[in-house]
Image 1 (cartoon, rainbow, N blue to C red):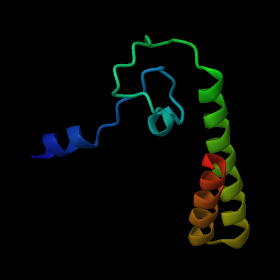
Image 2: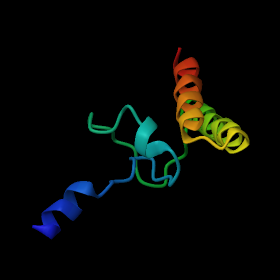
Image 3: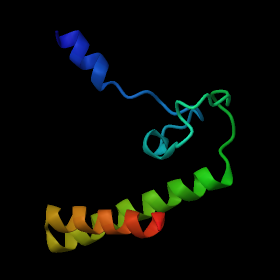
Image 4: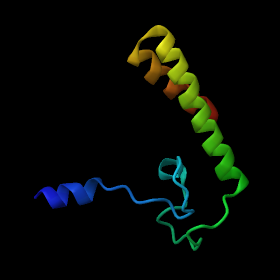
Length: 85
């Protein structure tokens, strides 16, 4: 039972092979992407990763200043929503 739960929670890396935010921001995963592991990241991928890293950094700073997890998650959600719009 524990093995099944552990396997279901395991996160597979994105097709590009990077170790960053690609787990969440790779829209082509599972659609027959033919990129090889170790392939270069495209401009759109780098920009999405920069937006996400900036949103996490900004939310972390604001959360630390206010000492509130709620502020962290609200600002993180708003920052990502603004970047996606």
